[in-house]
Image (tube, rainbow, N blue to C red; front, side, top):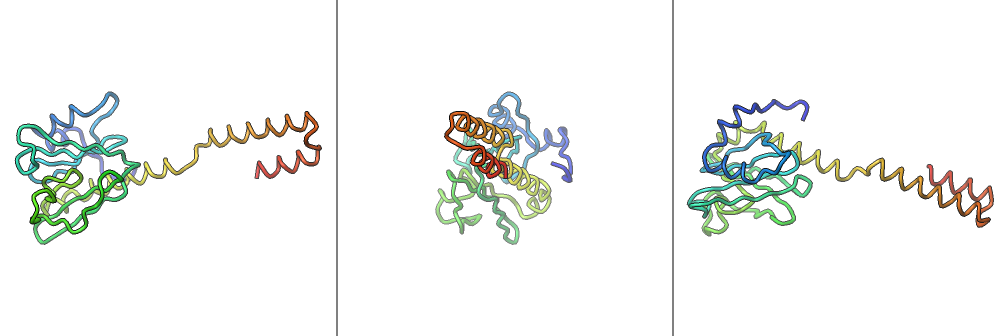
Length: 193
């Protein structure tokens, strides 16, 4: 993540406290670590790991009084990060095939179940905190973009393995007499181009 302001471990420990920190640590597998977090209100956060993000919620407003809600989404599965800002409040919404965007969901919706406090893929956040945590939001988008690029780029090893296998098949056809020298050379040129 070159070009981004580094998020120091001691700052991370200061940000994630209490139940949020406990829930994050319970859901980290061996080899993973917290890279940074985006803190929402109240007791909600988006936690960035190496290959996935966690949306962690705790408390009455999240419908998780004595426990917590945790959603894990791989970066390559994220279809959008939407930041909605009002005068004093905001929402960060993560869309993926399993969690579609809710569109007009406001900070104070009429239906409790469409509240950003309770939805698994959103966190409510104050406008001031959106502005303060813009670097972290940008870093999250960069991690998603990087995962998408890795996913869409064909692996060179796989591609070359496919070319080598096809060349072997063409050579076998030539040895069997199914291809003339000229046909073999044309097929080889097409394959290598």
